[in-house]
Image 1: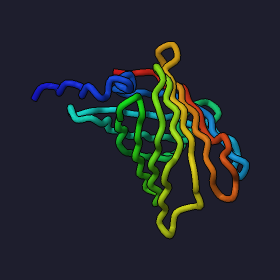
Image 2: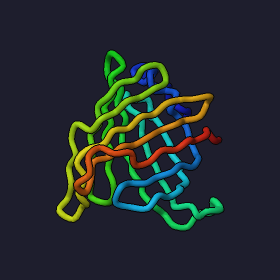
Image 3: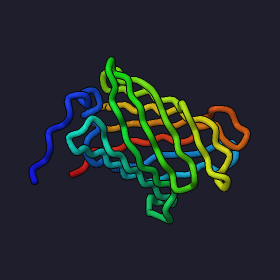
Length: 162
């Protein structure tokens, strides 16, 4: 079966398509700072959404993988007038719905809804920024959790691979 055409509604976010790998830094007022590796894959099947999967792992001071960290998956839906909806699910019992917009190769997303299972940690809001800079995917994530207001949590720089 041949690769389907990218749906025309996805044009503003088509730059995300493919596999990205790189490294970043994380921290929060309630935890120690850390370095992590990451792999993100954006795919499509011809319909007006992108599929999304992200995996991260802890890196030691020499940049070697230590253990898995977070994983998340979901869908990115492009709307008219460069608006965007993103639905993300986490194995930790959290589901997020983000809304935002695309301006050129910059994406600004904020949580509209956060749902948690009984056993999930206290998490109430997030903001994510993504941008294409010199061909690399840069992103930053702020979160409000465990009694803290929206605070910088993680950022990374990823290169397109494959």
